[in-house]
Each structure stands twice: as C-alpha cells, then as structure tokens.
Image (tube, rainbow, N blue to C red):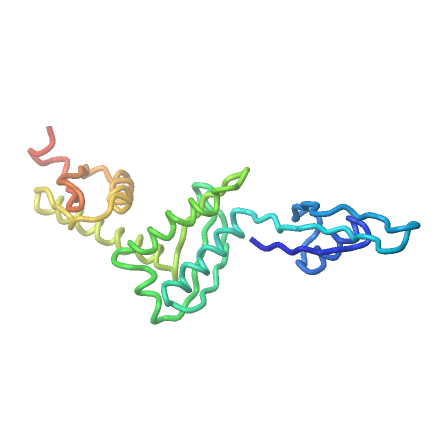
Length: 216
C-alpha cells in the first residue's frame, strides 16, 4: 500500500502536495489529517503547517498484481509482468503472467499445481479489504488453454475407445477441476456416461459406453 506524509500551509495544500508525489487523483486517495495548521504569534510568527497522510486506495486488481509480483520475486523467479485480460464466461478477471522461460515450469508446477495455489492465494489477498470483490483466474504463457486442449483430446480418445471396445475406460488420476471439466465436456456425447471413482489424490474419471451392460 502506497502512502506519503506531506505538509502545507493548509490541509488542502498538503493534500495536493501528496497527490502530486503519489501521481493519483483525489478520488483514488484516502486522507488522514495528522496535524491542523495553526497561526503563530500576531498571525504570522512561528506558524505551524498542516500535516497529512495520504494513502492510495488499491482496487482488488491492484492488490492482485502487487501480490503476484512480490510472490514470484520471493520464489526466486525474477521479475514478472502481470496483464489483466478480458473477463471469462464465469465473470472472473483473467490474469496472465509473463516471466522468463526458465521460470515457467516452476511457476506452473506439475499439472498446474503451483499456478492453482497462487490463484487461490491471490483471490484471498486481493479481496481481503475490498468492498466490491473481484474473482481472478491465473494463467502463465497460455498454460490453461493448452491444458484444456490436452484434456479434450484425452477425453475424446478415451470415449471413442470405450465405444469401440464396448467396455469402460478409466483415465489416469487427475485433480478435481480437471475431472469436472472432463465430465462437462463428455456430457455433450450421447454414447457415453462418466463417473468418478477412487479416493483423493487417486480419484479418476471412468468413461462407460451407454450400450454396455455396465449401464443399469
């Protein structure tokens, strides 16, 4: 959170001085008066200036970007550029991270685990003091889109195999969000149904052909 302390002959003058230093308009600042101005002896001698503390009001987006930049730097992954993209179909603001190529595998993690953890944390931190909350999804170097395309191919190939062989086909264990996406994707097909089986973290999607005896 950015803030400065400034002085001036009047409170307004002190506030304007602080706003210039912060580079923000009055609407984006919060003012706390530390000391009122006072006239000196005979109206001029030893007068006391006003003193104010002016703080920039951060939006959840500002807080999200600042948290991510700090977290990525502390992870030893250098400086990152955080860009806010369009809002997705669920109303979440998409944040894209650009970082050094060598840092991306660490930043993303196995099956996006590190990226998911950062996404969880950024939503908590960014909305902690917000009156109007924003929800964020986090991506790095287009990983999310590539992951969904990989899941689509995997699900379609497994469904085709289940129909061709006339028996259930189980996918490898995957995180809940990936299983949820596979279920939703295959719902549009009329020749298979899907179920989840097993216990976390080994829970997996099973794809069952509708014409098979497995369907009751």
